[in-house]
Image 1 (cartoon, rainbow, N blue to C red):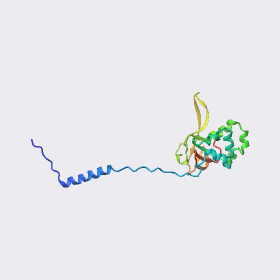
Image 2: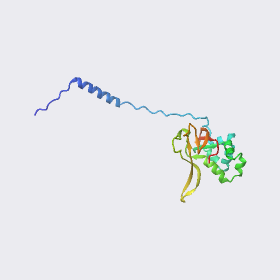
Image 3: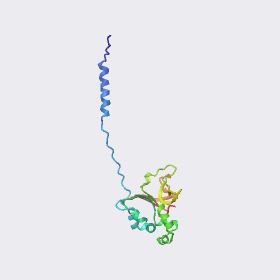
Image 4: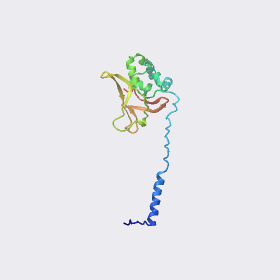
Length: 196
């Protein structure tokens, strides 16, 4: 039995070899290394912690008194911890009905603790660019807890930042007047009223 030999014309063979050669050559290219995007900070405060800023900035004397009273200013000064804070300045406290640090000193410590803890999202940094502009709003757990749920799990209250309307930024429908202040241990958004 004879096996037929198939003859391939050179005019078909050479282009096929060239195409295969190009195919295999294109598969051997090195993949380019990704270049990380280094976003510059909005401010130049990355040398100080949030607590250090609050302790020295004259616009935050009422929050400083409140955070000091409940022992939170020390934690906010710890560079090994990370926070996002929706921080009310003195004008925001006045709009909320607390015009001075003396009023903070007269309030029950549990009320002061609630005001401070609800402003703080511990453990993560959330710049405004991380807040989606879709519904529903983002839910961020705050530092305030309301005792154990079912006797075992502490119930953590949440805050709800939003960027949905015309490029604005809110937390629980309170306008943020200065966003994305970057510090060594987190990010601060200055709000126009105390978030409650």
